[in-house]
Length: 126
Length: 162
Image (cartoon, rainbow over all chains, first blue to last red; front, side, top):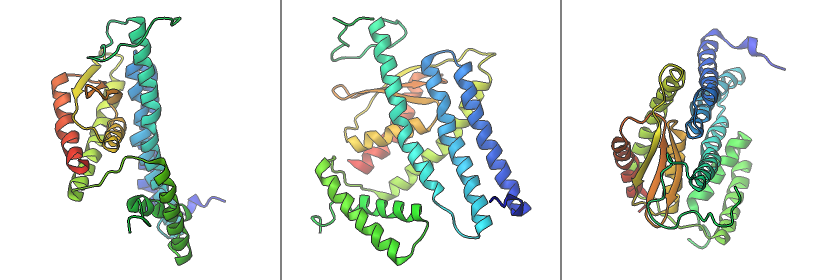
């Protein structure tokens, strides 16, 4: 099925570099989940994979199949667009629930709301 | 015209999406994609999203360029922080920024930009006070960050959307 060996050297070299760079960045991002100590710090780590990792790997895939099939391959752009559009949803959900919980538990290092109502802690069982 | 094409940009984007997914620009696919684009734009009317008119298209290109540069720069910066995390304590913290943007689509775009650039995470936006809370991984100076986001992203977004 795969004819990756048909890939000429001039295309194989940039594809390899892009693929290795993309996966290395994603790996570093995943390592960040262990190495960073706070929850809010860990929020940042996976965005490495979501931004640079995805973009580099998708470009590598575009080049590979464009050269192999000898035509323009552009639908990987959709992967990049949708990943960038949807990651904020999960991240904001996680970040906001962490913030809400820390405020209710009264962690001192979490900033309180400047104004407006504070989270309602009455009747909440933590 | 507005009646038949309530969201021309959305229809156009859906057509592009259809053509990209099908990987073809044959006349048949263009007709089918346009029909789908227009039909979904009608469905969108019932969802009653905030109407926004894009202005200042040159500004959009400049902003996109800035974002691309920032994504690359912050990726490298965050990689450095993670790799050095064992030796040096990570100096991260919260930054509160007063934001005068109110347009929902502009705020959504700002959230996408802040999330796509590693190192900043959108935490909370208070609609009443207009205070945006973000978390910054490598915090040297809160005021600098707040200034940077206001100047680099908020001002162009205001010009584009409002």
